[in-house]
Image 1 (cartoon, rainbow, N blue to C red):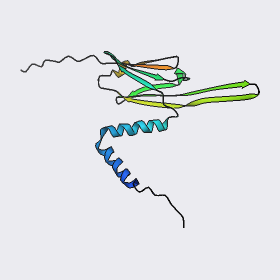
Image 2 (tube, rainbow, N blue to C red; image 1 turned 180 degrees about the horizontal axis):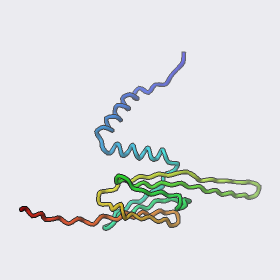
Image 3 (cartoon, rainbow, N blue to C red; image 1 turned 90 degrees about the horizontal axis):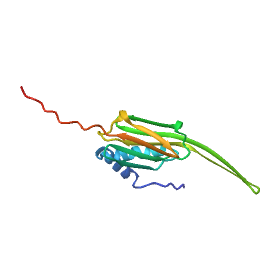
Length: 147
């Protein structure tokens, strides 16, 4: 006789997840975020700030060469991805230590309608990536004359 482990609530949990996905618009975004985390080797810490004329994103990406960062926008979703690889070797009093930090990262942000995708800029300084997303000029109401 062999013993097998069976999760008694598994089918009910699966059914509940399916219902959440169908009726909760935020559930899909949460799932996408979790999928991005799984697809990444590491996830940079990010600060997001809204100013009067722009949105600012600061991402901590130590050890990432600016040439290895990809930023693009598609369907109101800003994607920041890249990779890093660094090695250090230390020898001291008969022991040797090597450390390697490498891997890819991916972060996605859904931008509001007020974001101006054509004027997004980015710069990297001492391991901090700054992405500036200007807001669109407010459209003035237009008076329509009835003839």
